[in-house]
Amino acid sequence: MSASDTPEAPLDVRVIRGTPTEEELAAVIAVLSAAAAAPRPVAAAPATAPSGWQRSVRSLRGPLHPGMWR
Figure 1 (cartoon, rainbow, N blue to C red):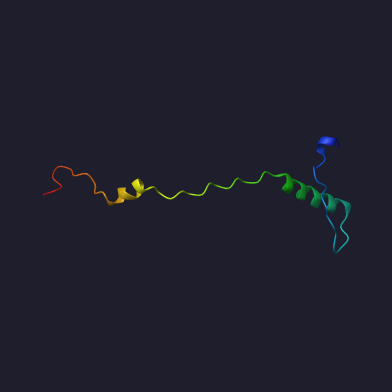
Figure 2 (cartoon, one colour):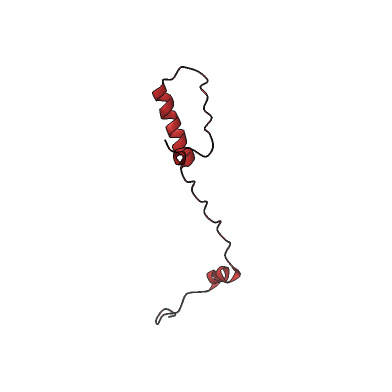
């Protein structure tokens, strides 16, 4: 293991109950390290309220086509 493979912050894992084997501890530490190193999703930008021009479009009627007004 080289210096570039070591995590930036030490991982603090404590066994509260039971006696896990070395393989079980290694598996848990590998999963926790991968989860800690995974990129976090970027939150979507909040939706902006429609402007006054966008809101007023709803009150406009559709175009008249020949024969529709009869």
